[in-house]
Length: 269
Image 1: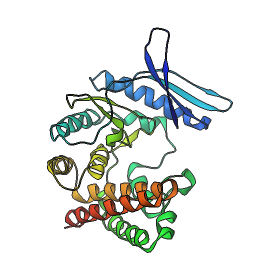
Image 2: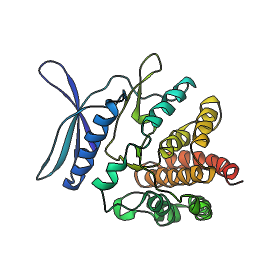
Image 3: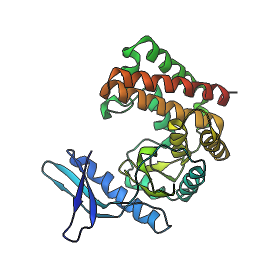
Image 4: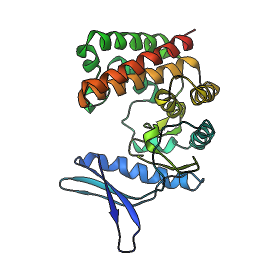
């Protein structure tokens, strides 16, 4: 989806999100409802002011939030992230009713790694299998982990899951406070542990930020389940880079993912 800055006659700033697919409109509507729900709890989410469909696609207009995305270097930010994720707990049950044809949370988490969603241009495991011996080996390792621990995903969850809760979608002010969480069009019902796993995946593999995220995640879910989510994120990121980025970027994410495998080894014990 494309994102564009808007400004009205009074200087108020907005963000226009555009998709060439009319089928994305329900996702925008769900994002508008979720952000309204979370803002009532003090969550720094944008306000959607307009959305609709046109013959060539669909759109949503939301308020622009302050701050900017930065690498997570201050360990104190982790406490803010965890508090926001906890606000998402148990508040997403209505999303199951809004999207009744979606697979269950457990089914989708496993399927994304073992079979992939090439038809949705998402977690295309064929790209890892065919790109290089290294990416094929990585795919085999994460698939084995997920198959071994799939039974631990025995309960569906009704949390709100942002589903792309990466540092790129967190806006921080100069005081290192989280003042915005954006890009809600992928929201769904599931396990909020996935959002913490996303932050853990993108964090440096060493340091206090990593350790605090890991501790918070393990306090909220089983080690095997956390590992499944990390496997999902490995496949998602490496596949996306293979299909959309330069070879040097693919190599960087492959190296990063290999580092995540050491954490998987610990979680599998």
